[in-house]
Image (tube, rainbow, N blue to C red; front, side, top):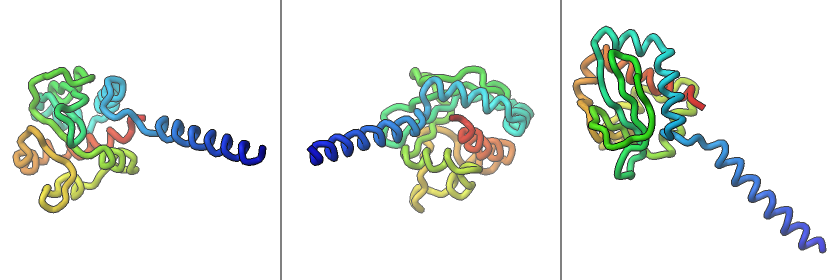
Length: 159
């Protein structure tokens, strides 16, 4: 009887820990998550005003490194995100990918990832991959680079 109780208790504990860890793991880039990201982006004047001044318009997708397609997408007009949701084969200007563990690490960090983490070349163990986008132009343009880095901090505000 005691052995049966221990087995049942252990099994219940395992189920509880599995469901708790899944509930605590955000559904990055889901349509709901992307919409919350849109709201957080648009509330951040450092991003919207800086990109607005350079008439920044882009369709930006996000996803996981080994997936065939990105998961989520935002459309930015003059620095403001006008639409956000699931990726539906839109023509992209930017497609950013990283392993899920890396996204989780970056987005749970208090101030987001560091510039070094974001811009480390792949051959030096960099984890962010630009499937599409003019990476070198962004590095040379502070009006784009600052908001890009800030957008990762804003992502971390999405729960």
